[in-house]
Length: 233
Image (cartoon, rainbow, N blue to C red; front, side, top):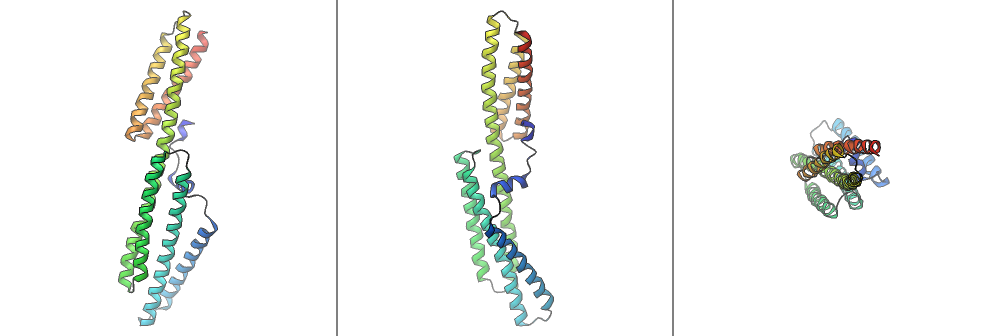
C-alpha cells in the first residue's frame, strides 16, 4: 500500500480535485471549440485589411479568449469546492488553498474586464499573453493541493506506525518478563522507531518521498518483528 503513495500522477489528482466535468463545463468547452473554429474561418476569409475585417478579427479573438477565461473560472470554482470537501487535508490547508484560488479568480476576472474593454489587435495580443501566464496558476494550485494531500496521508501513516511501535514495545516487554531472549527484537524495534522518527522529520521538511522510504523500511521491520516474535513463543 505504501509504495503506491508517490506514483500518483498530478493529472489524475487534478481531475480528483476539480471533480467530474459538469454539463455546463462540457458545454463551455464545446463553445470554445466553436469559437476557435469561427476564428480560424475569419482568418481565412479576412485577407483584405479592411476596417470591417479588422473588427471581425478582434471580435473573434475576444470571443475565444473570453470563453477560455469562463472555462478557467468554472474549473477553479469546482476545484475550491472539492478542496473544501477533502477529508485528507487539514482545515488550515483547506483555507490557505481556497484563499489562493480566490486570489487567482480575482486576477482572472480583472483580465476579463480588460478584455471586454480592449479594442485593438495589439491590446488583445498583450492580454492573451497575460491570460496564458495567469492560467499557469492552475498548475501551481494543483501541485500545492497534491503536496497537501500527500503530507496529510504521510502523517496518518506515521501516526499509525508510532502506535504500532508502542504496541510492539509492550509485547516485547511481556515476552522479556517471561524470560524470553528479546535482544534481537529490541534491536529491530529500535531500528523501526528510528525510521519513524526520521520520517516525521522529513515530513515536516517537505521531503515526502524520503519520508515514504523511511516508513516503508519501518513496516518491513514490523513484519520481521511479528515473524520473529511468533517463533519465540
